[in-house]
Length: 581
Image (cartoon, rainbow, N blue to C red; front, side, top):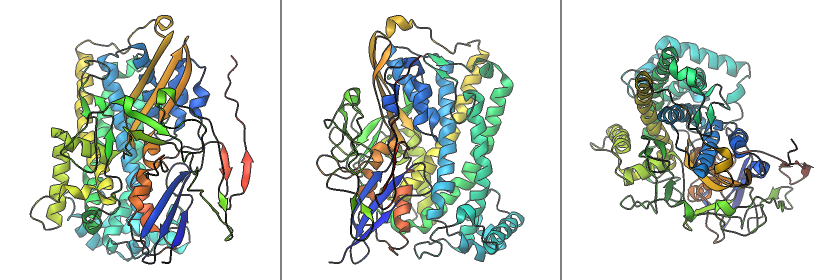
């Protein structure tokens, strides 16, 4: 049997450094796969010995994309350790900040990080603008920004780029690959919305800045609440937020959802056969508190829980004590299967294996990634938008079920099924992408309720934004966790505090859950598992690998160890984590 090794390093159009190695058989079907983060982070070590009230400002630097969610999880971990319940205004403001991050992140992900796995840019040059405008009406009653005049202008811009050889961000892709399936007109619709989304994402950034102070790296969340008192008191600021949300919400409903429905219909064969399904076991910590009944007692927009093996009839309750991290195949020292409270971050890089062909390969039988392998009750699980939709369906959550069913009904209609598309289509690369769009519409709608709730609460005379606490009293010996959902999935920060200083700190991030290497039993992580069985049309252009991996929205934080593709070490850097004040 003839086998071929494919290396994609780095996986582009994501944050950070991710390497995928895949083995294909004589039919170009992937039979084995390995995912490796090629950069070390180490922020957890930097936090040791610091004042826990400052942890959020440093922890948000874990990522340059979803800075605010790391910020909030870190603050919540300390609040949990100190036994602090924040005021209602603070809860709503935090929900609005995180909700703004969701809608911003999901739209940017689809158009600017993932759409080009489905959309052939050069095919759009063959499109007729008149026919394109007609095509757009098949997917939306009121499509966004795709009138004939607008489409002609966009096509002329694209033609100019191609003639001048200035494709820029559209360069170096697999244009013409036979696994692109959209028509020229459908491609032109997506290109138009790609360019328009560049402007639209600015509106969501403004939303985050209104209550966050700035974006990225907001500054308004503190242990005990929020600091944006003047913003919530000012009706003009609330009105501005609502206006921006309305505009962005319109783009979601008139461009993003129709485009995903269009792609889902055209690529429905891949959804129906489960291409990219992967583990089919899911976990969600739950998120977005809807009342003020206590730290982890409040009802939530996204329910928590675990679904195993795609069985939606069984929802297992979440128990954070069942979370552990394994380092059997990760470049770290220490014992395996440690709970984050006892977790360690001791780098132990063992390098790559140089072979006769001049390239370096992962030592897949040994350690091969900077990502640890998280386990929930000794299960490998996937996290993210698809997990949240799956958990919501299993929990029979009324709101999530409504939005997911509506999308499946539209897909079933487009496929001529005369009934909703089967729910199993969500267990696929297409389904993972659709789940993110479904969630974005839900989030944009519920945020309209939250901004009204904030305005009404302030109008009633409640201006409280912070809960006072005695730091010297609560910080002697404490530990806590902040567990909720980031746009990419379940995010937890665990902190151990002794004598007012951080003694241990561990963050288990979404791309740790999904992008992890094999565990101590040799079981695959979510990325690796999702690639198995995928047929690659052209091994020299592994578009299918990009499509499935990008559907997770990987975000691999970078740091201090650098290697090139042939295994040559370019440099080593020793960073002092001590702090003298």
